Image (cartoon, rainbow, N blue to C red; front, side, top):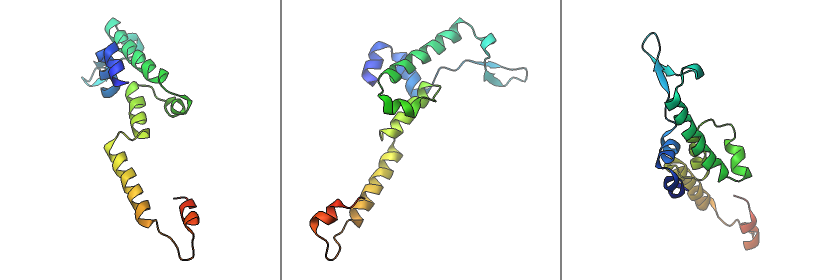
Length: 124
């Protein structure tokens, strides 16, 4: 998917992996805050259109099960992070899954008087 999106528009991949391009302004106290709808200009609108296009690419590639996971997300970055966790792309998820599987392997044993079929049919 990454290569396909980059082939269409490299900036879309940046939005997916880094988050949407911020549309910020300084308030009266000099603190950066998100722009209101009234404050947005043509450049801000272009940034939000890019975010919407990147979101469309991700959503169109999903099946119904994955879509139910991400339907409440508002940015492509949120969608991408949820999909990474769901499909074990994050290193900490891989480590914890590996630890769980190793623990299950270590605890797998045959009880006295148990047949091989009974041992293999137990849920772990």
